[in-house]
Length: 276
Image (cartoon, rainbow, N blue to C red):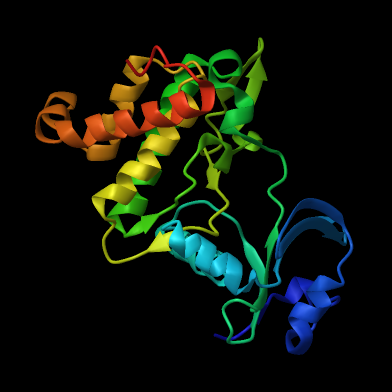
């Protein structure tokens, strides 16, 4: 796969030495894990994020495989997933550089640079109950469901499908009397991020659909959502009436609720009233 470099960064990076140039970038480190570093930097007043992958080693590769997890071997997966979402019209990161060096999956060096998504807040940060109007909450619920539906229909599952990975563009909302309301002059825009673990196939297996949706439900139960919000999500995700969706796909939605309940109980040591 060929390296990629947008014109806007050619003043500081070279396509022929892209990874080496990228690792010399200085900025604010946001995350540092074994074999991976993420930092923010600026060029001509514009913000960017660079994710550097240095290889995780065979020990970590086999550790993940023995735990029945697919290891993250580099930036390639996120590069492919971001571009696929953009093809589908799902708002996400804008890539401006990508490099991949070496054939050894355990020692592979790669990087992905994307534009910073400024003036945004994650749906987790917004704490839906306290800072989002009822109307906007309903709009966001339907939009989340439609994003999930389109992804899954096109064979993509996220694997970290939580509210914190959806960023709301604050240009499309107005803060009035302590609540965010939709500014009708701007389209409601949600960016889906953190796609380094995403999987892509021709069809999304049911178990991975359940994993995505249960993760989203788990992350939302303490944000003030109601049973009506859940029903609204089901209708938008299935494209069916609530009665038809719950009759024809009852076991699927019970599985989503059961998995979300297990996640919540594991992390909080108690059950959620929304997940009886």
